[in-house]
Length: 252
Image (cartoon, rainbow, N blue to C red; front, side, top):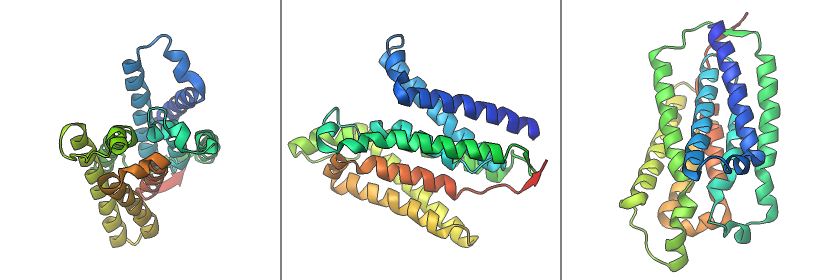
């Protein structure tokens, strides 16, 4: 397990450095050499791998994953608020400095976490039925978030022209299913944590954040124009990983 943790630490550092590089202008540099579509796949792929590495790290007792999630939230912040340029007219200037704060704060927390857990190894096996379920759940979380970060942009035309949205056709079908399964997963975490009397408040916050996002998406999508999407999804990601089980740890 010690070898697994060392490999995981290296992977987290590499993925984190690439994510931070992209946040602070790297995406514009690479777009000179890489097509937009391929750039999007690369960017999302790295973030998804980084997210899953944080989940695995939590399951192995290597860290709490909160710092890395803040880095991811910072990396996705502008995309989650995107209104094809209209967001710069609708939202205050400080709103677009939040990603820098999240990334820098997340970097500090993640670095401290890695340092404090540098000699920690896991007393349990990683490949257990429970851990496999946790990993599968978080794959679904990342798929759901991938679609929902586009909610402001996708609903833009309908809101702007006052046209009703057909929620279960075309691209809206994927957004609607994503919203529903993220809500189901959040509710499942609430139930599980109530049964084991563990971080009930945190799991409830996770559930409420996605429930509010659902209410906006299905009833008043115009609210996405004021920057609620990145706030709610960031809160969902942070609280979701915070209530995941952590394996028992012993010092090396």
